[in-house]
Every structure is written in C-alpha cells, then in structure tokens.
Amino acid sequence: MDGQSESTAQDYGPFGKPIFDDPKARALSRVGVIDVGSNSVRLVIFDGAARSPAYFYNEKIMAGLGAGMSETGKLNPEGRARAKAAIRRFVALADGLGISPLTAVATAAVREASDGPAFRDEIERETGLKIWVIDGQEEARLSAQGVLLGWPGSYGLVCDIGGSSMELADLHDGQVSHRVTSPLGPLKLQEVKGGKKGRKAFIRDTVESLFEEMGEETGKRLFLVGGSWRAIARIDMERRGYPLSVLHEYRMTPRRVSKTLKYIEENNLEELRSRCGVSSRRMELVPLAIHVLRQVVARFKPKDIAISSYGIREGLLYEQMPQDLRERDPLIEACRFAEAKDARLPGYGKTLYDFVMPLFPRCGWQKKRLIKAATLLHDVSWRAHPDYRHEVVFDNATRANLGGLKHSERVFLGIALLHRYSNKREGTRFENLYDLLDEREQRDAEVLGKAMRLGAMLWLKDANDPPGTLKLSAKKNELELVLHPQAGPLFGEVAEARLKSLAGSLGASASARVKGARR
Image 1 (tube, rainbow, N blue to C red):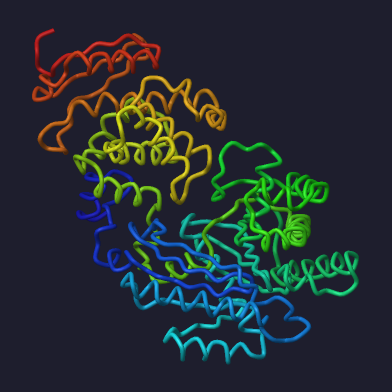
Image 2 (image 1 turned 90 degrees about the vertical axis):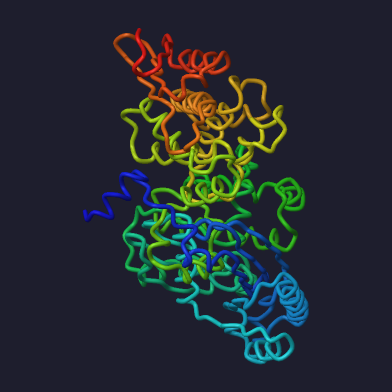
C-alpha cells in the first residue's frame, strides 16, 4: 500500500475516500434515458449521487408497440401512435428541464418490425431524438450492468423479460460474460399456436435451448429484471402478506414461484390486479410470464431469486461511469451524498462511526457498512417535526431508493435511525416489519441507535474531533464513557440519561468521566 492509500485508509476507514464530489461523478448528476420497449415506453432522469442515483423523474406509458407483431411483422398501429406521443412529451419535458442530450434505446419490437427503421427515422425527424436500436445481446449486457449498479461485484444469472423477448446474461466477479436472447416475451407468447399446450411446449423447448446455449451450471443466484417479474413479485407479496412493499432485493424461492403460479390461476385476475396495484395491460401478461419463470427456475435451479428494480436504463447510466466509481459501494456513496447535502454538521458521521464502533468489536464487513450508513444518515432528517422524526427516518431507510440493501438490512437501518430519535419503538405503525430481523439483530440496531443518540449531543467545534470513547467491559458488565476534555461541558442531564438508556439496552451499568480528570 502506498503512502496515499495509507492516508486514505486512516482517514476514511474501510470505505475509501468519498467520490461523489469528484468531477467525473458530478458530470453524471443529471442523466436522462428513454427506453422504447415492446410493451412500454419510459423516461427516467437520474439525479444526485451518481453511484446510487435518485429518480429525479420517472414516467411510463404502456404503449404495446410489439402487440400482434408475430402476425403482421409490423409495429402495432395504436402502440406506435401512443409511443410517438409519449416520446414527443418526454423530449419536450426534458428540454424544459434542461436535460440534454437524452439517451434513447429501442429493443425487440423496433429491431424486429419491418417498419422499425421508419419509426426510428420518423422520431428523429420530428423530435431530433436519435434512437439507438440494440440487439438482444446488447440488451442483455445493459440489463446485467443495471444489476451491477445495485450489486457491485455480483455473480449469477440475470434474466430480463420484456414484452417481445427475454434475455439471459452471466455475471462473474462483477463482469458481464456470456449472454443470449429468446422470443419468450409475453406479447410473443400470446401468438404461439396450439393454445396452452402449445405454449407450454414452446416455453419448455426454448428454455432448454437457452440452458444448452449458456452452458450453465445450476445453483446460481437468479436476478429478475423487467416489469412482468416485478408484477409477479407484487403478487407473491400479496399472497404471503409480506409487510414491506419495496420490490428491489425482494427474495423468492423456487417453491414460492410454484405457489404463486397456483395462486394466480385460482384468483380472479381483475381482483388480484386491484389488490396488488398492477396495471391492466401488465396484468394481461402475468399469467404467461409466470409460466416462463417457473420453467426457468425448474431448469436452471437457482440457489435463490432476487428482484432487481435496476435494468437497462440503469445499465445505460452504469455504462457512462468511470471504473473507480463503478467499484464503490452504492449504499455508502448515497449516504455520504445525503450527509453532505442535508446534515447540520457534515463530516460528523465519520466521527460518530468511530465513536460507536467499540460497541461492536466482532462485527463483520456487512454489519460495518450498515453502521457506517446509519452514522452518515443520523442527522439528515433534522428538518422533520420532532414528534415524527423517528417515523420519518424509519420510513426513509426502509423505502428509499438505496442500492445494495437486503430487506432485513433496510429494517436494521430503520430501527437504528428510529432509536437515534426515540428510546422506544413499541407502538409505531412499523411493528409488523420488525420481525424481518431476529431478536439479536433488533437489539444491535437499538444499541447503535441509542449510541448515535448519545453521540449527537457531543458535537465539538471540529467535526473530526472525537467527543470521547465508549468502553464496554464484559467482565464488569459496565459501559464507561471517557469524555474528551473539551466535551466535558456538553455532558449534561440529557446526555447522562441517554448514556444510561444505552447501557440499559446493553444490560450494563453506566459511568462517565472526563479524560485526565481525577477519579
């Protein structure tokens, strides 16, 4: 390790120097993408911390460009009109917002339709927007890169379903490798001859061909990308009574896929659509998509299944990132960005991290990153009303667009931040979510929150100056706070009460002294 790397490690610990303010990252702070798919046309404008971007604007039109293409070979006339109107609106909207130039890509419907080139030229002539028509392998690559935006260093199989096609891509050590495309999009399956029996045979044979072409071993993680997969995940949540509605990182199992297929078949689709908040056009495709998923799962035998809300649009953003930005942890970078933008004392999160870490002497890497995230976010919601801050921060942690977070980790972060503002968590509207963590993890989150609650009272003039040191003695069952001399006057009645509350959560007694003072 050279001198500069050593300095970085000392200054920032295991998370590296913040990069969101680097000019290479700031250049990506406002990026607009139009995705012209077989079923939908969508505009997304990304904003904020480029490594884990916020959705500044997100609008979708279910145009159905690819409907009926198997019979006519052309784009659906109604879908074409709807898509043109949507694109004209998106271009005008982006122009009004000062977002230029837009990046636009079109997938299976436009690339396969005989009038696809004419449609593309017409859009460019009328709006000035150039649409890049990509092939199936490029579509698979970009979708897989979208997965990498949320899970850097991932490995597994990415399965992206659109209206007219389904792509597979292999991820190894954070790199996209072998990829294939297929006609397994639900719009295409609607037109397969032979009824249910014919479609079932077509799906089975096509998935078998994909398996052989990919040369896959079984037992990998399966990442699901695409609106039909997300609709199926919503239905799975409804079936299970799952308490958290966030789709990104929602996990399914092969057994649950089979149960959800049966659940779809046994329920009225319109009633199910209404309960799950799925659009009518999307719901029409779900019964076909679930059969594809069941066959993919049966053949590839994944060890687990993860829903990714990130896909081709996020892959286009990832494409523009420099490598050093790609390698960063999206959670930590997003939290750093939030602290710099919204905290009253930016930079104190790093000091607070060092302050609380003695309470977690044996925690691993995954726990450390959650602690780091919590300390960076500990003061970004101070503008909320004091009576509701504990609810606001829990809501933000569990529902915000943050990459690289399992649902259980969202709840851990939420409980920790809740206790940053409140001693108790009983009686809130979030109690049904707590059980996504076991009792030990709930207790660790509570300890972290109460330690942050204490540390937040001990701000010094310089955010980098530690206010003191926490020492937990397992033998004596005692928590001692050794205060920096300058922090002594800050330790009043409220801080003392917070120290005792923290000690109570640890099952320990509490004491405090100023460093260098006589005992």
